[in-house]
Each structure stands twice: as C-alpha cells, then as structure tokens.
Image (cartoon, rainbow, N blue to C red; front, top):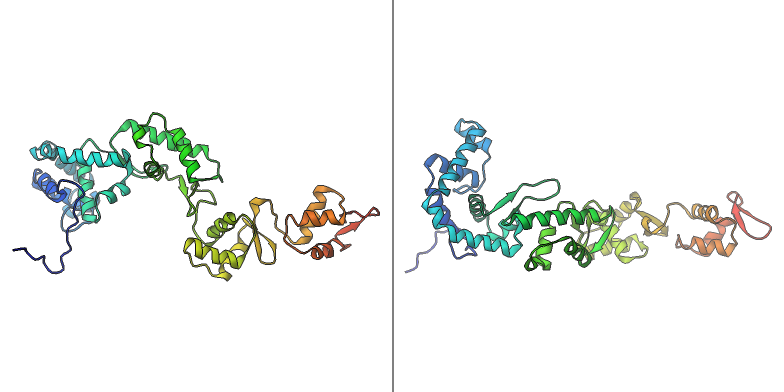
Length: 355
C-alpha cells in the first residue's frame, strides 16, 4: 500500500545523479560533532530553514566572535573529511566532478548550482558537497569574473587568460556577431582540450566575464559599449535603428522595440528619449539617424553652412546633393535656406559661400 504524501507538502526534487544528495549530506553531517554540525547546518542552509546565515549572524546568536564561528566551521569540515562517511562518498563526488567536466571544467557558481538542483534546498546541499572536497575549487567573484567553480587549475588558468585577452582585443565601442566572437575566443584558447571546444561550452565560459556581454540581438562586445548595454528605451532605440541601417521615424522605432524586444514603448516616450540622447540626430520630419553614421545635429541651415565650410564654393545643385546626404528634406527646403542672404552669399559665377 502506497503512503499518501502529507497534505500541503511539496514533493522533493529528484537528483540528476545516481546518488541521493539528501541522504548523502545527512550521513556526512552525522560525522561532525554536535556544535560544528549545528554551525554547518546554519551556514549552508541545510536545516528546515534554507537561508544561509553569515558568520556574524551565527556569532551574535551564540555569543561568540565571527572568527570563532569560522574556526568551528573549519573544524567541522575537517572532521567530516577525516570520516568513513566521506570515504564512502568518493564515488558520488566523482560523479559530481564528471558533471562539472561535462559543463566545461569551469562554470559560474550560479549556473552550476542551477544545473545541479531545481530548488534552493538542493542547491544548498550541492554547495556543501562542493566545499567538502578538494577536487572542487571555488574562485571568488572579482571585478573581472563572476564567482566560479572548476576541477582543473590548468584549464581554468587558460580560460581566464583567454577571456582577458579577448576583452583587450575589443575596442570600446566595437560590436561583433556571435559567430565572429566565438572564433576570436577560440583563437585565444591555447592548449585547451578539444572536447571543450563547442559552442555551448564556449558561451558558458564567456558568461564568466563581467566585462564582455551580448545584447538582445546576440551581438557581443565590451559590456560598457553603447550597443551592448540595454538599460532603457534609449538603448533599445539605438539597437533598433542600428539594426535597420537607415533613418527611422520615431513612431516606427517605438513599434519595432515592442515587436523585436517585447518591451512596451510608447510613441511619445520614445520620441522624448531620442531627443535627449546625443547618439541620435533628427534628419527629417520625425526621422532619426545615428550620430555614428556621420550625421551632425542642427537645422538645415546649419548643415548647409558646414557643407560650404568644408567644401568651399559650390553650385546650387552641389549644395543640394551634399545636404541630402545628411538630411532627408525636400530640395525646396534646402533652396529656401540657401537663398537667405543673412547666412549665404551667391557669387557672380553662380556658386554659393557662407555670408
């Protein structure tokens, strides 16, 4: 006869391993003396409460210093490592190491724990197992990399070096397609096992870097590049116009943002953001282009002035042709401005110069 689960009790997530992580952790904890065991349970969230407590919190509750709690924790881990239960767990730990190897030998802490368990209780158990064995090495988070785990120091060193070299090879505003970035990354990875050289693993390694990122269009570059960071409507508008490759009306920009990125963009809000951002230039009635394309801010008169300053005296047709490279306006609009004697002078040979 099957035992019915208690009403309201959530079913325990099944481990993706041949061993039961719940039973394994219980056996290992039982090998520690009572006081260290209590500290470990609270530090790793292994009890009824899955919240992991800090050294300070445990010390305050127990009336001891943070350093004393750290010493008790370390003693508890050492007592488990010296136990028969830890020796019996060797095969389970080997299986865990194989799983990390399949993920690429080095993986971010968050990605690894998410791959090992589907709930916080399970992630806490695996975090505890990783800390126990010298097979696994944890690298702390830095300005350059996320917190990560690895099983091979040599491979980890090569990945770190390749990521740093890849970042340095990118200019501040450079944006490259994903396929090109992966090729460049492969060029930097010297001496790494060919078994890891697949797209899934490469992208997992790229995610370790806090300085390299991709935008919603799967374009990669430095995380600080305007085309990579997407924090608001301005950034999505930038990507939208850049993707289009030609000036767009602000209403069309708003529609494209919603359609492409699933971000609600109101037309009026989008227009206001385009006006405020120096990355965009108004080149026609409601039409915006990117400054990086060579467009300059200003009214048609300003554009005519810049054209004549750069090129010298030009005929009427030459002025129209040059201005229309920078503005989407009617010929008559250009001619009306050009024939204003307050700003421009018509020479005897029919050419125009700045007045």
